[in-house]
Image (cartoon, rainbow, N blue to C red; front, side):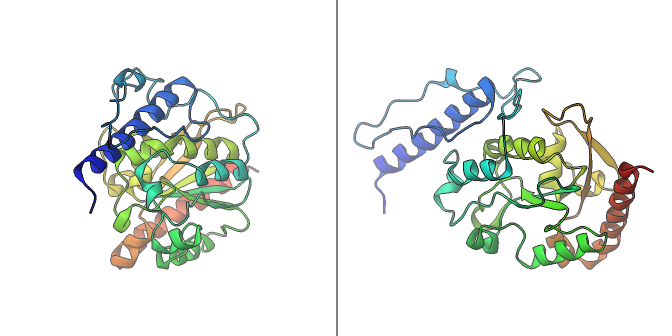
Length: 269
């Protein structure tokens, strides 16, 4: 069992990491893992300077996670390497593998879930458990496959303990990675599975239920898209919800048909 001094030092280290990371978001967006904050149990450590962190009520365009641009020359492999070396939030301490995502380099659809589960943490691959197998079948029903024309990732890239929903601070730390992935991959459309992904990407002021978000498209404007315009975003139920409640399969199928129709529309004549 840890003594009280060690626990206090660890808490200060986590807080210092978060404040340092938030400050970097305001400056130029996340680019690389931050330096380790040295806080010792013996000395009690020095309190981090709160002026280094951005206020959560910052003006529009200056909020943490809202990067003004993207890393020049970003590639899926480069972003994945940055994700695997990230030490910006407490989730990395318990992970077996980070899960950056996988799929086509220029996908028709970017699928975004909430976070890796036990199977994903073990393999380092997204959506490989029962929910992932169902997701593959759902995508295949509208001629989409991760090996050919989809890219699959999550809001957070490390497994939350007990497969719980990501905490706001955890999602905030990972959000720049997701923004970089969107700008790099330039998908034709985005499919958010579950309320966590939908609320984060759409930046809702309150956590909206997925039932109030599904069935219609929203626009997402990525940075550095060379004038390609907003990306249509569709939200639907998470595959794990369908495994728990088969009554949700019909509305989920209606959402998938909407997505297929949108892709045909984007293809043009």
